[in-house]
Length: 158
Image (cartoon, rainbow, N blue to C red; front, side, top):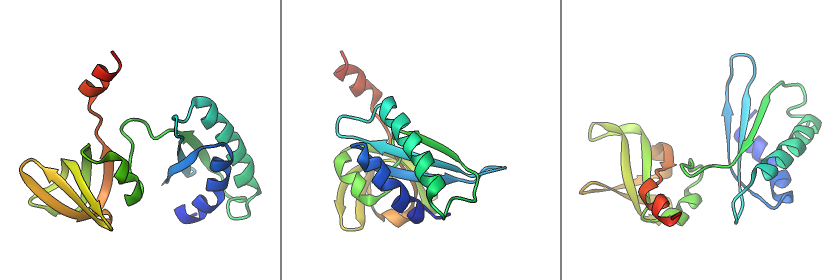
């Protein structure tokens, strides 16, 4: 089972419910794999959206020959406020935001860091970490997760 194959089967089901496919994780379990599907919507996906998508996906994936003979666990949820970024295109909505990054290879003795997203140009992403600016390609990142500013969120909710 590959993520690309899963996307082809999953995306039409998600969009039929008025949601967008944010990303897919395939987690190898001890007994069976877990397929995690993250959905979003313009006004934010709801629990009802997740339930409806999960119900239809269970049916759709069972009918798909690629997945028919495999036992798996399906989880459908929203990406949350600390959302993982799955594709470079998703970053454009989060300029000037902080991210938790895990690099594939060490850079200046660090593999994990917090950096502010400054700019995106094609495949090059400009981050600022303290006083240092660094240009990375999305493939350089093992993990890119939005780091929510809880103080700002609390002020916005007052």
